[in-house]
Amino acid sequence: MKKILRQTAYHSSFLHRHHKKRNKNTLTVVSFHRVLPKDNPEWEGADPEWTVTTEFFEECLLFFRKHYSVVGFPEVLENYRGGPSLPDNPLLITFDDGWKCNLQHAAPLLEKLGFPAILFVATGATGKPILSWQEALFALWKSNKLCAQKTNAIAKLAGIAPPGPVVSEAEYHEFLAKLRDRPLDTRNKLNAPLFDWISTLPGLPYMLNRKELLEWQKRGFHLGTHGINHEPMVDMENSHQELHISKHTLSQIAGNEQAISCFSPPHGIYNEDLLETAAKIGYLCACTSRKGLNHTRERSGFIDLGRININQLALMNTRRKLDPSKLASLLFLQPILEQ
Ligand SMILES: [Zn+2]
View 1 (cartoon, protein in one colour):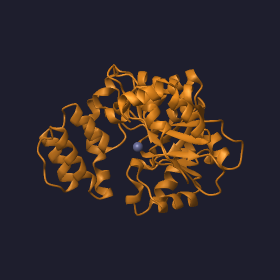
View 2 (tube, rainbow, N blue to C red; view 1 turned 180 degrees about the vertical axis):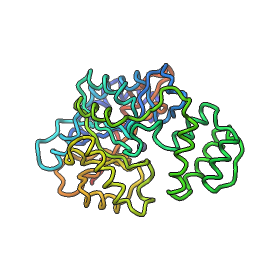
View 3 (tube, rainbow, N blue to C red; view 1 turned 180 degrees about the horizontal axis):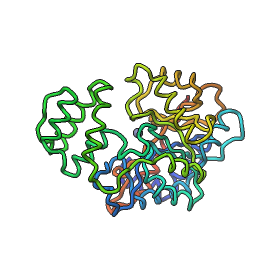
């Protein structure tokens, strides 16, 4: 939508009125990853595409308060299973991965507004310095520590040609793509050396540990799984085991097997087979990366919820604040998914 048209549509309340009516009975699910204060030293290793500032996050929450009824995951589940209906224009807030900053910086802002949220945890990364080798590689590159010696050592481990120093963004993405193409067991071997090399970054470890996950839950927030080592589950010979182990591990932390009933596929990569496998294991729901809004009618089978990622870079105005007209056109006009 053109800028002037978009802003006029938002500020004249046209978009709001359209949304109130059209999306009255649709559930909007949004996803966040890292949430950091602007001046936090953790920015040194953080990917701005998957990180928002606390200021921006709070602006999003105020936007949600104005246009939505923020609901918790148990209410969503109850609604689809024939329980009490959701309020008008419901919205569910989700976080992926299990970053420590969610508890440190996002939880207090959510609590201030009385908003629930669900966090999807990569259970193999709990208490680790960073989520996986990919985030570690990015952190090294961003902090100018990805020298030729390190890239060549990683390339040797992965069985690809040594790239030499990786300096530009294009070189970084080329190197990352080559590593992503390697088999799963090779990719898993990259974690240890990369985690080791980022040990000088400020604020480590970045991932929530077991005690902190329990605190997240005690403060009234909810938990779901996000695989073990954050690798795409469709690449795995035994996705059944991945789904089962992550559910079991998190259930032990949460102290309740029934409490863990939803998962988010790592990297948003999934297929029908994966959802079927999840259903057989006892999951009731998945929050995927399928873009769109979800009808709120009762469902008999597995609940597959579409979700919209909140990318700060795409939603800021020139003063680096949230442009509400951009967020409104991102969220209000999404297609309504049939299943
Ligand atoms: Zn993730």
